[in-house]
Image 1: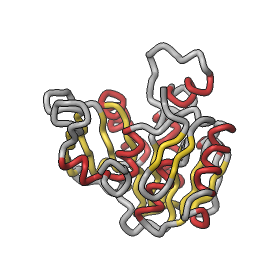
Image 2: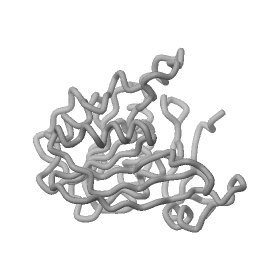
Image 3: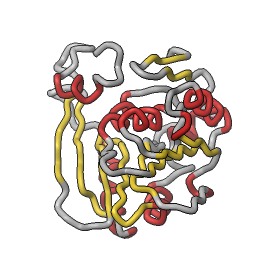
Image 4: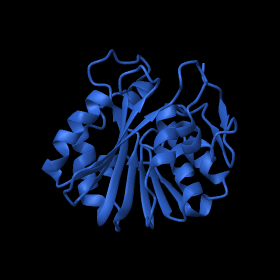
Length: 235
């Protein structure tokens, strides 16, 4: 059972009210996303506020974090207001499909719901946080193509199969993959996650690989430690 809070080096995440708890996917995206040159960032489905806070720690950008679930919205407001970056992060209670902003974003990040065929959680809030019937790949690509600045990036983490589907769909919205990080839990595992970056320019993507653990539980690889050491207390 997840703890009601999670301490990082520079902030604390309270999560008793949020539908989606702190997890490795969110930490990976928050640590890896390319914040270079970003002046405005949009975090889609912020949940506890984790990724927005990680990005605020890493750069000086103004961040808008949107969240459709009311209790999760209140939780993210609490976590962000208790942080040292409250003046740079604005939380909006909104689904992506309903979100309107007068400006454009240099970076858009999301750890989206991705289950489509699996059995739904009987808890409707948890189901909405995990199943893509409330936020499909088409929803993400259509909205982000309009919200990105000309040189902006969309960066997201998805399971291998669902990520490859989104890769195939993105070009229809004028978005092309620039960078793929392929993630394995163990050296002997199949690739389980993809962190992908998309932009408007078409060129051959850079491909990288990350393994989280050497083999034994909590025996983390040097590359994973180096990526996350500015956040996790254990590193």
